[in-house]
Image (cartoon, one colour):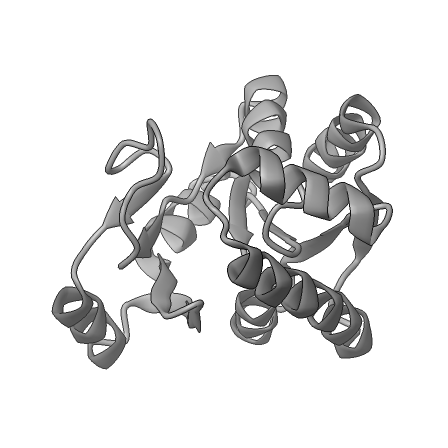
Amino acid sequence: MGKPGKLVVVTGPSGVGKSTMVREALKRTGAGFSVSVTTRPPRGDETDGREYRFVDRPAFEAMIRGGVLLEWAEVFGELYGTPAAPVRDAIASGKTMVLEIDVEGGRQVREKMPDATCVLICPPDEGSLTERLTRRGSETPDSMRTRMDRASVEIAAARAMGVYNHEIINDNLETAIRQLVDIVNQE
């Protein structure tokens, strides 16, 4: 059997540009993407099985009880998680896999898979994050404030955990994508 692949965990607060960066890094590197499971409804043109697997709460809770998730968390009242088997199988077959998850999920993955490369994506400042969330168009003023408060707490917690190998400040999207591509391509 060949050399095992690796796992790159990309985390950061909501609205920081993780999805855009990961989507572009996957195109440029050929790495695989682990599709997470969530109880939240699809946004915009999201398709089941592409961005997420959309399931109801009882199905998700059965996955938790069955121990089939590499990590999971409740975020803004919805459950999100990563099925472990596809990730482990891909890595065993020599593929690099990318997970896009929240900070708590990153900690859980690092505990179970200490060799994972963990990347924290941060906004250059609060103003740019507010602007991105506003453009998304799915936020009320209250939910926006909640997300902004959570973002600063998440970033501080992530830095305090000490599990992140890399931190990328997304102040220029193309530069940030290139940094992520370099990390994915590293041995």
